[in-house]
Length: 263
Length: 303
Image (cartoon, rainbow over the protein chains, first blue to last red):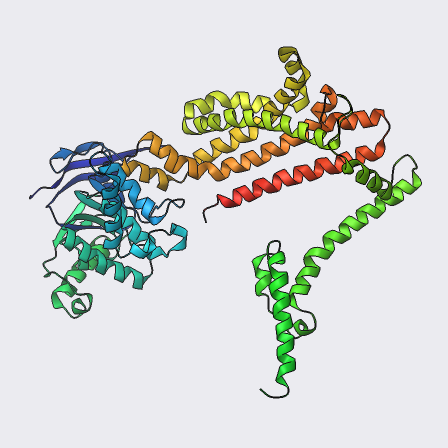
C-alpha cells in the first residue's frame, strides 16, 4: 500500500503562557507499508512531537492523519510505541510487562494459553526468553529496551513507533540492538517510524530519512531515499561509497543548512 | 605445606568463622560501605567484625546505661520516684501474671495492652478504609482535590483530643468516642500521602497506559496501585504512629480497660512504678508497630 500512513497539512500549536507556540507546520508525509522511516533533526525541532501525533498521544491543531485508511483519533494498539527510557513497569516481570500488552489486544479472541505463547514468542524474538521471570531492575539497559520492543511488537501493530529507542544506551549495545532491529523489521515486515539524532543509525536502518528544519514552526526540510541493498551489514557499510555519500548528505543538511546558533 | 603455614591458616580460619557468625547480625544495621572497608594491619589484631560490633553495639548500650544511671541518681535524691531496680522488680511481678481478671477495673497488663491495640486497630482500620480510597480519588481528580483541600488544611492541625467531646456527644459512649478520636487523628496522613503518591506517578507509566489503551480497572490494578503503594505505606506508618500516640491520652479521659486508663488508675493508686512501666510498654509497642511497617515497606520497594 502506497500511503499506509498519511500525514496531510498537519500543524501543531501549543498554548503557552506567552501565547500560542507553533511547533510544527505544513507536515506532509506518506509512508508505504513495510517502510522504515527515520525522523532526524536538531533537538527541539519537533520530531518527537510528530511521533506523539502519530501515536495519538496528542491531537494535531490542524490537518489530517490516517493510519491504514483510518483516522488517528487517539492512542491505539494498532500503533506500538517504544519509548526512549523503556518505560517498563518495575513491579511486573518482563513476561508480565509484555503480557499486559498482549492481553489488551487479544483477550477477546484468544485463550490464555495462546496469549502466553504470544508473549513468549515476542520475548524470544528479541532474544530474551531466559529473562522472562526477571524484573526490570535485574536486567541491563539494553535488555530493558529489548523488552520494550517486544512489548510493542507483541501487539502486532500496523506501525511501530520508536522515540530515540537507543539514545540512552552505550555505543556497543546500541550497535548490537540496531542490528537486531534490522533483522526483526525484516522478519516481521514492520512499518517503522523512528526518531533519532544519530546520523549513522538513520542511514543504516532507514529506507527514507525525513530531515526536519529547526523549530519553532518546524517542517519537513528534505527527504532522503536510502537505496542501499538489504540485508545491510554494518562492517561492509563502513567501506561502502554510497553509504558515505548518504551520510555526508544528512550531515550537510544538519550542519550546514540547519545549524543551530549556539545549540 | 610448610611449618609456618598451619598457624597462619588457623588464624584465617578463626577470622573467617568470626566473620561468618558476626556479619549477618551486623550487616542489617551497618551501611554497606562498612563491609568493604579495607582492614589494614590493625585488622589482624582487631578483626573487622569485632570493630563493627563495637561501633554498632557499644554506643546504644552506653546511652541506655547513662539514661538508667541518671534515672537512678534522680530517684536517689527524690524518694517518691522509684529507681530502676525497684521498677524492674515491680515489672517482673507484673508480667509474671499478665492475663488475670479481677473485675472490670483490675485486669492484667496484657489485657490492658490488648484492649488498647484493639481500639487502635478498629479506629485505624476504619481510617484506612476511608482515607486510602479517598486519597486515590483526590489524587486522580483535580476537582475533588480543590474541593477537599480547604477542609483538610483546616481540620488536620486540630489536636486529636479536641475531637473527644464531639465523639462523646454524638456516639453517647466512651469506647466508641475513643475509637472516633483515633479515626479522625490518623486519617490525615493516609489521605495526604496516598493523594500525593497518585499525583507523583511518573508520566512514563501513564503514557504506557495511554498507548496500550488500558481500561480504568487495569490502570488501577497494574499501574496506579503498585506505583502508589510505597507512598501509601508511608502514610499508614505515620498514621499508626499517631494512633498509638493518641490512644493513651484518649483512654485517660474515657476510662475502661486500656493502657491509658491503666496509667491513670495507677496514678490514683500512687503506684508510680507501674506508671514508669507503662511508659516503657507504650514505647516498646510503638517501636514494634513502626518496625513491622518498615519491614512491610521494604517488601514493596521495587528498586
